[in-house]
Length: 210
Image (tube, rainbow, N blue to C red; front, top):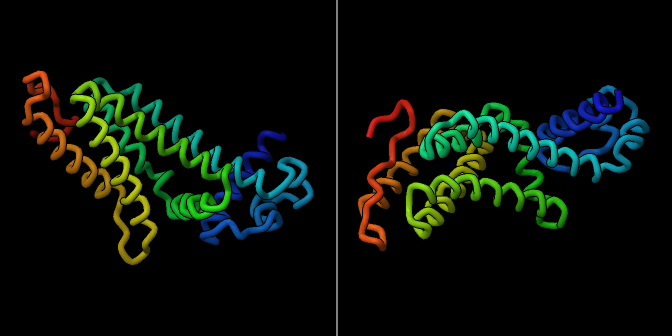
């Protein structure tokens, strides 16, 4: 029961933060959303700050789990890159409330060292996942440059989705990121590497044509 209630409070925190668009919510707001008393919420988490940290930790755990499952199902380095892109724009992560919560945590990171640390973990993990397969396909310097660009594009499209007046859907975001990646891969593989060889073995993601 404790595990169930803790999860209910974390889910409620995510919904309330998403609705408010900021972390200026109270433990009572979250408890009401979860259907429990504020006293019980304090019993399980001690303070609102601890509940908020657990909420962002929960988001990161889910993203890591989804990414691991997607990478396991991919058969080639290029397919693994596509899997990372698709997971980044997964429906659960791309839900309006979840996006609003992520943006609220980014704002909080300007004054909270612990929140900032968790967001740095996310950024490093995304870059590392991209870089691992790009290094199989490209020289190290090109791989690092493209990993940084792709990660920045994913984050940028995610932020753009929060603009109600100019939203970009899931499939459109995936297609834009794939186009960016394909263009840079094509440019990088058309240029001889320092060893004088070209990486001509890169295959397009499943369902795409070269």
